[in-house]
Amino acid sequence: MPRTVEFTDTEFMIAQAARLLEDGKSIFVGWGIPQIVAILAQKLYVPNVIQLFEFGAIGPQSVLPFVRGTMGGPQNTFRSLQWLNMNWAFSYSAAGYMDYGMLGALQVDPYGNINSTYLGGTFENPERRFAGSGGGNQVASHCWRTIIVIKHEGRRFVPKVEFITSPGYLSGPGAREAAGLPRNTGPYRVVTSRALFGFDERTKEMTLLSVLRGFSVEEVTRDMAFRPLIAETVTEIHPPTEDELRLLRDEIDPSRIIIRGEKMTAIA
Image (tube, rainbow, N blue to C red):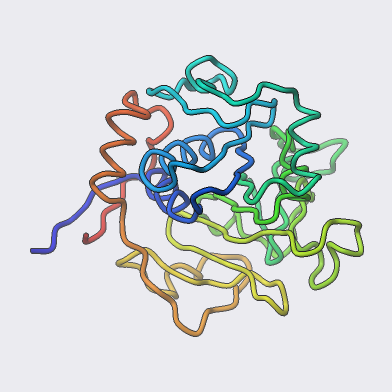
């Protein structure tokens, strides 16, 4: 019998991103939701993934529940293989050791460029200032594959970001390499609360690959400020599983500080 699953948009994004990682690979983990993605993935799907926190902890096996507000607390970094510093962490990604990077975003454009710095006005005099890069620029510049996690709101998908905090494919094919960034690196997937996007191999433009069960292609793309490419076959994304939701709600974030969000439903 089909059944209806209730979840939040945040839980869906976390679960969807966790399914993308490969076992035995390394991942440079950004602040916030990417930390939860890495923990969920390691507990359920990729036990041998190696996490790198931007301040220098390598290979943590976090003790649950996750402690919000501190990336480097003893529970979050339990059993780390190494404890270095930020310069060492960035040097590992620059040397090509990091298979995946994962970042949140305020805005993203068709080439996967990320703005997390400001909205409106100018850099010197913005209408709204946000956290900025942190280690995001280094992650997007040097990791082999960057996964972007962003809430699906039309105003976040813009033809041109107001400020490039972290580089995607910049202005298109060849632009990353011309700017001095390593070949064969760049954005890999964009995970949203409704869909999954990739990037066209030839044009480097964002491409709709999959939608959450119950949504149509038109519903997903209607409010976006640019029209993405559409894959020849757009597949269906299953809602979060019982195991994913149980782990998120009962073990990782029982206080629901991180996983709270807009209520959603889908048929399992």
